[in-house]
Image (cartoon, rainbow, N blue to C red):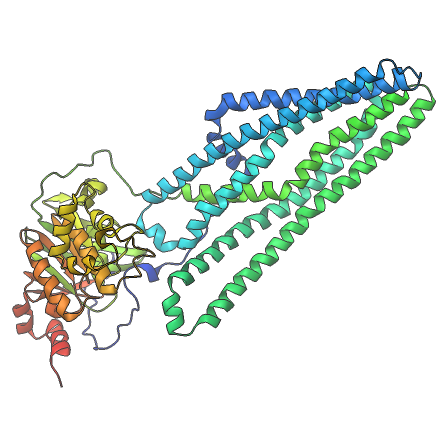
Length: 612
C-alpha cells in the first residue's frame, strides 16, 4: 500500500465555500487526442465495410471494365477513319465508323449510370453499417470517455465525418477503378502503336507522381486538422445552444462570439491552406498534360514525316495520351475530397478503438438480491496518483437507508458512481450480498439499481414514454400509478396533451422541479432493489419536497437506499449517515448519534438550522 494510505489526512474544515468547485469527476479531466492512423490501416478497415458487397462490386467492376474498353477502342476508330477513309478520300465507310462511335458513347453513358447507381447503393449501405457500429460503440464506452471528450466532437464524428466518407465513396471509387483500367489499357495500345512515342509521352509521369506525393504529405495533415477543428466548432455550438440561459443571465454573448470566432478563424485558415495546396494539383496536372501533348505532337510529326507512323496514328495517340493523363487529372481534382475522407475515417476509427466497459467470462447474473452492500478498503482515483476515495469501508444491511453528506467535491457522487460501476475501484472491494460487483454483469447490476440524479435528463418523447424508460414493458396504468406516487400526476394532467405531451430540448418547457418529479416517477416504475438518490429533491420547492419525501419513504421501504443530500432535513430518518470529507469517511452513525458527538456533522447541521 502507498504511504498515503497509512494515515488519515483529515483536518477539521473551515465552513464556507469548498476548495473544489463543481460536482463529480467532470472537472478533473482534459481532452487528449489520439495519434491519427496510417493510410494503409485506414484503407484496410474501410474494406471491412465493403467486402460483404463483393458480388455487387464485381458487377460494377465489369461495367467499369467494359466502359473502359469501349473508351480505349474509340481512338482506334479515329485512326482508322483518318488513315483508311479521310486521307484517301473514301467516304463510303466513314458513316459506319461514325455510327460505331455514337454507339460506343451511348453505351459508355449507360454503363456510367449503372456504376453510379451501384456505388450509391454500396456506399450508403456500407456507411449505414459504419454509422450503426459507431453509435453502438458509443453505447458500450465507459462513462469516463464522455468525461474526457467534448460531446460536440463525438457528434461531429458520427455525422460530419461519416458524411464526408459517404460523399467521397460515391464520387471517387468508380473513378479509381475506371482510371486503373483506362491507364493500363491506354499504355498497352500506345506501345502497340508506337513504342518510341509511348516512352517519350511517359517521361512526364514520374514528375506527376513526385509532385502529387509531395503535396499529399502536406494536405493530408491539413485536412486531418480541419476535421478536428470542425469537431471543436461543433462542441462550441452544442455547448452554447444548451447553455443559452446561463450565457444570457451573465451577459456573456460577446465572450461566446469571440470564442466561436477564434476557432472559426483557425478553421478557415487551415481550410484555406488545405484548399490552396490541394488546388495546386489540377492546374499542375493540366500543365503536364499540355506538356505531354506537345511531346506527342512534335515527336509524332517528326516520325510521320520520316514514315514511321501515319497521321491517323498521331491523332489516336493524342487521344490515348489524354486518356492516360485524364484519370490522373480526375484524381487530382478529387484529391481534397480523398484526403478529407481519409482524415474523417481515421477520426471515426479512433472512436471505434476506444476502450469499452470491461466484462469477464465468469460474470454472473443476479436474480433476487437482498440488498446488502459493503465497501471494503476502497481506493479510487480519476487521475493516477491522485486518489479521491481513500480507504472507504462501511456495511449496509438490506433495507437500510444510508445518507452521504459532506462538502461539494468530497467524493459523495463518486461513491455511488462506483456502486453503479460507472467506474471500477483501484483497489478494495464493493460487495452486494457478499459478491464482488466486478463479477456481476454490468447490465444485470444496473437493472437492480434505481438512480435519480441531480441533473435530470429527459428525452424528446411523450411524458409517459419518459417515465416508461424505467420499465419499457410497463402499462399506462403503471405509469400513472408511479406518477401519482411521485406526486407528478397533477401537473402532468394540466399539460397540453397530458401524458402524451411531447417534451423537447431535455424538457426545457417544464420547471426544474417538474423534471425532477418525472425522474423520480421513472425510478419508482423501475422497482429497483437498491435505490440511489443523488440530490433527488434539490430542485423541488419545500411544499413539493414534503410530498415527495412521503412518496420516497414508501418507495424505500424494504429497499437499500443511498441518499446524497446537502439539505440535512431530508436525511434525519436515515439508518446510517456517512460524513465524507476529502474522500474519507470521517464520521458515521445515526442523526442523533452524530449530533451527540458535536463534530463535523453537528457543526454542519447547526449552520443550516440555527439562526444567529
